[in-house]
Image (tube, rainbow, N blue to C red; front, top):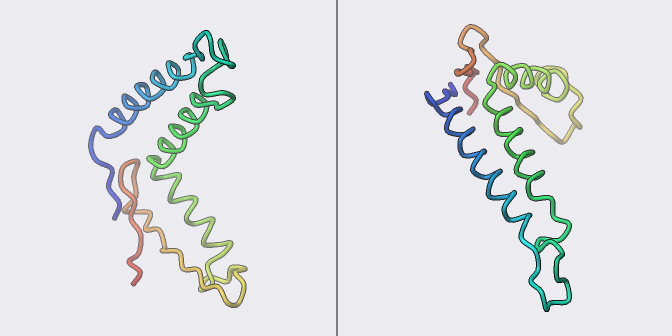
Length: 114
């Protein structure tokens, strides 16, 4: 059973806003006058804000347990060796079965695998 902590999404969103703000500030810093790169961004071509925003999107997607359940089922159909998937003979992929009646937006129920 995977359970999402109450209020965690709000905390993640708050932290993401903070990270975005800091990344925006860092990207705005320029090399000082008197240096060979004067006026150019200190971080160069690094797209820090874009990286932070992409990371935030992935974290928020990981918090969508119904989507995760659907992805697990699709992955199992494609690759799990014990369900007729197409894994190479020397690779044994086992994906736990999702237990739909134990799943919700904040709970993901799946079989136990040892």
